[in-house]
Image (cartoon, helix red, strand yellow):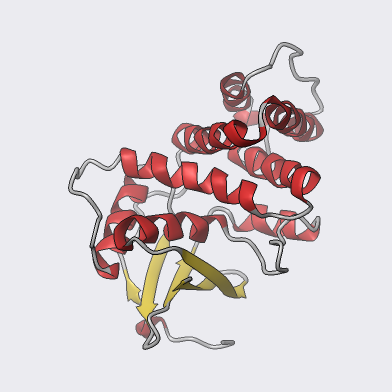
Amino acid sequence: MSEFKISDFKMLEKAPYEKMDTRSNMELFIRGAKDKEKVYGPAFTVKFIKYALMGASRQTGENPPEDIKTLDQLKEYLISISEKLPLPPYFLLIWAQFVTDKKFEGSQAVGTQLVFRGFAEGEMESDRDAKPLQNADVDQILAKCRRTTIELKSSPLEFGYKKNEDGSIDLLYRGCFFSEGCQMSLNQGLLKRSDGRMLCGSTLTVCQWLKAGTGYEWDYTILEFSKPHCIVRCFTI
């Protein structure tokens, strides 16, 4: 899929902002980390905080406080130093998550699914439209997902999709705010799933929205990963 026509995709509303909201995205990622803590216990949190603070120290050249013991304390500290960081502080949470998963599982598997499930659940709970997603069609689900994530400032600048004859869906991301972090993690060998495929946090979140609306489990495969766009195929399993 080296070439594509944007006219093949149904493009949804363009995001009216130039960057993601730091606090809302930090809270969503911390919620996901707390879900993961329920599975792995305190050992996960200790290592997660350790790696996030290690990354922050490397970027700022400053030693972090020694009294950061909880995920909420970590969140507030990273937000407080955000002006000193070359990248938004939620990148440190993503990187710490990938490194911790590598230590616990050897690849990005169940643990990563838990984090982005918690992320998506946080998005859904913030939805101002209380109508349930059950038995919704793909168009309704993706429109609702896009509208909600724009309100939270957690969505790529441009997002579109194309429904295929076999029931799969191709997603188009343009101006994704996670692309630099993905490239950095990929360079460090941290973005591989257990079957060797590349991980995409944005699509993991979309898959949770699709699951909530259709009742089916969804998986994905990245077809293109590059600037200025990524294309990912989602399918039921």
